[in-house]
Each structure stands twice: as C-alpha cells, then as structure tokens.
Length: 268
Image 1 (cartoon, rainbow, N blue to C red):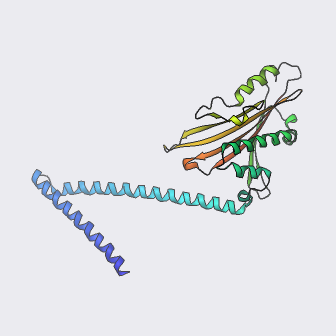
Image 2 (image 1 turned 180 degrees about the horizontal axis):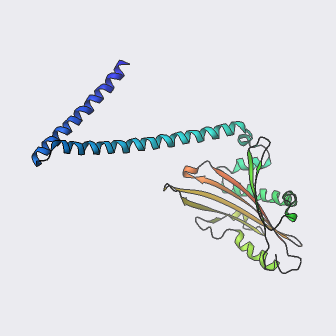
Image 3 (image 1 turned 180 degrees about the vertical axis):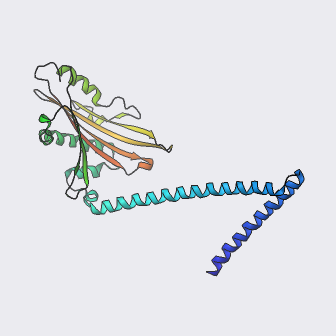
C-alpha cells in the first residue's frame, strides 16, 4: 500500500518539476522578448488546461461507449439465457439455420431451396392467417410475440392493384425478382442453373455508418415461381450474414407474393 502511494507521489513531483522547468523557460523567454512573465505563463496554463479538458472529454466518451457496449452484451446474454431455443435451434427450420451459419454455398442454397418448397406447400394457410382476401388495399405492419412476450417475428402485408394485364404483370415482375440492381460481388449459384422458374444468387451490400465506419452484409437470395391456373406465386428466402464488425449477426426473411387478374381482366 505504501509502495503504491509512493509511486503516485513520485509521479506527482516529477510532473510538478517538469511544470516548473517549463515555467522557468517561459520566464526566461519573456524576459528576452521584453514581455511580462506572468502573461506568458498564463498563456501556457490556458493551453495546458485546454489540452487536459480535451483529454478528459475523450476519456468520458470512451468510458460511456464501453459501458453501453457492456450493457448491450449483458442484454444479449440474458436474452439467450431466457430463450434456450435460440441456442438449440429445435425443429426442422432451426436445423436449416444451424447449417447455414458459416457453411458452404452449396449447403446454404440447398437449405434455402428446401425452405422455399416448404413455404409454398403452406402458402394458402399463410394467406388465410393474414386474412388477405378481406384485407383492404394498403399496407399492414405488425409485430408477433411468443407466449413469453418476446418478439418472434415482424410481418409486412401489402395488397395493391396494378392497371396492367395479368400476363404482362407477372412476366415483368419476374425480371425484377432476382434483384438485378444488386450488382456488387454478384454471383449466381450454379447448382440451380437447371431448375425452371428459379433464381439463386448472392451479393454484397455495403454501407457507411454515421461514424464513418464501413460495414458489409452478404446476402443469399433464392426465388421460385409457381404457376397455377388463375394465379402466380413468387416465394423467396433471403439469408443475410454480417461481415467484419457485424460478423455473427444474421437475419432470415421469408416472403410470398401472389398475382391474380382482376375480375374485369384489365388489371392485376
């Protein structure tokens, strides 16, 4: 204990000695240029005070950032402890997610294709759950929670009418289904090359945060088109995987789109 205090005391005296040496130099310089020594010392003290306040402000900012990060990590830890299913990933869909994290492109795209087929098999049930036929024209966003009150998923439902013929509408929409505007590091999955009405690609999204830090996300997209008598379905899955400082973060998006002609045949 005494040794620690002595160390601090020696450091204090060393700093004081250095400060006195600087003052002696400033006094000598003031005398040489014919300036009042007190004025030059005051300038030096003001400069030192400004530098110290700047350093203290930066230290407070770093401490606040560290505390915020610790709070965020603690929140995630408690969330995973209260939801063990996030770790075990039980069920068929969870097993697919487990395979995707850090897996090869072949395994990831195979899992996504399988998920798309499963989604199409229950697409009518999904539309009934959303009450799509009775939904007014417009957009409905909702948050769905589990029995424990925590968020399970977010849902976006959009119903609209276009003044274009049915055939023209579903043909042009398929040209846009593969996100052709996403061109950065874009690659097509060759394993789906022989499949009809199927798009499988991956591409990278990059953004610059407000802090100036650049971040990127790798997205894998699988879209399938299912043609029936009086309706066309697009079903797609998007798996997003964070890179760099976002590594370990991922999201899974499932979407359906149904095209039907209007009763008068002049719209979709």
